Image (tube, rainbow, N blue to C red; front, side, top):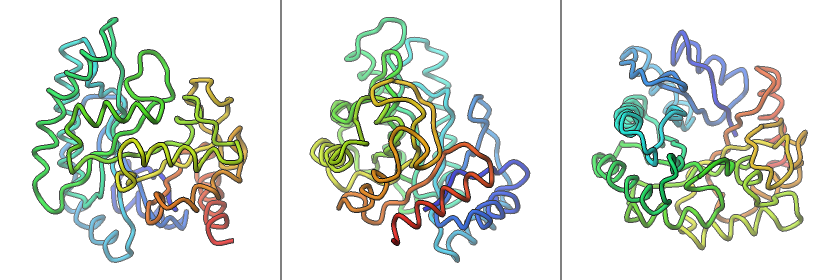
Length: 280
């Protein structure tokens, strides 16, 4: 159980200090402005200290790529910048010892057909996956959206065509966001909702492809297609489904990272709540 941690001012000095206050067992970070295209080099000293501390304390780390990335975009500039931005996140992920880099699956913009957008996804993304040849290279983890607009991947079965477009590359995985799949129409609050959804994911891409979970409750109802996170147990998903999440075979050994409101206190409470659900 862990959280997305702030790293402005120092990946190790600021980020891991925050993580320790949360008693986080896993962490996720940005290595660039999430709402920009800049590709900062980072600090080798902070990188090494962060990597060493995570290894020593057995804290798996993950990188979240910038939100602007969209490999389905009809705009040439956006597509080109997406390649540069994701390559940067993957390189930085390797430098800090991250297990995976999370990227949103994007949308087909400009009225383009889904099939055409997926062909472009293949053209642009497959070469980046093929660059991941080292043992310490991170996995690329696809995160589906809440279903807004012409999303390429919102429902669980949408991962199928996306994986097919990328030849089910061995370095490809899934980051499952509970708020996103709930908003897209998978009602996790139903008695068997969580296990049914995870069964569908395993049937679609294989049980071993789930590498990370974003544990977020939802402010809105199932199927609302609104990406508005809530604290664990305080939203429309509720607390019980998060306990159910931890009892499915596909989630064994898979870290849960929160991206919830409330700042430091809210984050610490959510991490503690998830640990109690797991341990109690």
